[in-house]
Image (tube, rainbow over all chains, first blue to last red; front, side, top):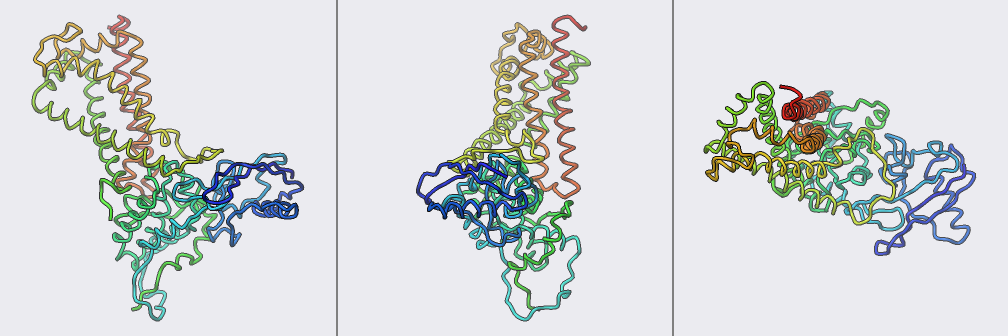
Length: 269
Length: 229
């Protein structure tokens, strides 16, 4: 495949950026989008030019590091995947692809396509955890949890914090992210205790960091690589939470991975 | 910590509650108007009942406050949200799957609704309740201020006004298709099952309210021009 790429180049956070056009040739339709960018960067380095900076890490859709607004869609034209899971077969030979960084006041561009997403970390630091004394790992079934609640919690915990929701939202709102993190904890007995305090603290931090106000457009849900539903309502976020299990089963295998345990500390009984 | 007037969730709740109040008012207003289709005398009886008595005046003041709150918060939200979006816009945008056009254009639709409301207040409120408040006995149509049926014939006798009202009501329909479910969603009707229901309810409410209003406009237009009795 031969493609024309229009890529946002920006030297650093303070510089003015602009689009630059690049041609890539002989790209395999089976290569991933990031591999295609690797090939382009290789060519740029070989010709003594500055390679394009973009975020990536696990390249299997679970770390939440990759971003990119590709042809008007966060994580590109395919649904329920991250940019690293996007393949070139989704494009046609001769296509022009526009690649932009996340655009949101709370996610300033650091360089080229890399944005500073530490605002999400700050929201988590404000309350996205459970405060308990640590100790020995309790028996897995010591606290009975209804299957439906566990499912809802797991679905919410599928959030990888990539920032696609705020980047897509016309209001620059991080509500889906906050709602998912609040719900994933509040749905479990260990997290329920601090539910209200946590929700209030996280919402206050979200507002303080300059994210916009949710108006229920649902664009976040449509572009979320984990298809977290926007009915993870912010209103109910403050009380308990109502994240129901998703209908799309494609990501279920990923959601059942105990990723969310990273933010849950076991209760010492 | 946050409070209801400043936090993002609080503002959302204020938009939701004020919106709910306005939808209930619209439903009431539409039912009242429908009387006109069946009996102009009955409609005038309602107009007389809801004239410039204290209950009606207090009701009007509360209603105006509701509109004002909804309107002011809409602007506050839009200004904050544009700021949150950052200075540089995306060069390429695409429609997200399942996202309604109305949901992304609520302010524009709301402004059309407000402009229509101003025309409507000029045509009716200023000729009816205001005339009574000022203690006059005839309005600029040369009718008594409680002759609502007569006023509708004056206004809707002009087809241009009918078109203006229909455009206004169409904007209201779009606004309600998002507004009603969004309001219920914000209030907590948002389980997997209820999400589908509230969207369906929103379409039904929007269609019933707007169709009711439009019917009255069309009937009045036909009556004023002598096409129907």
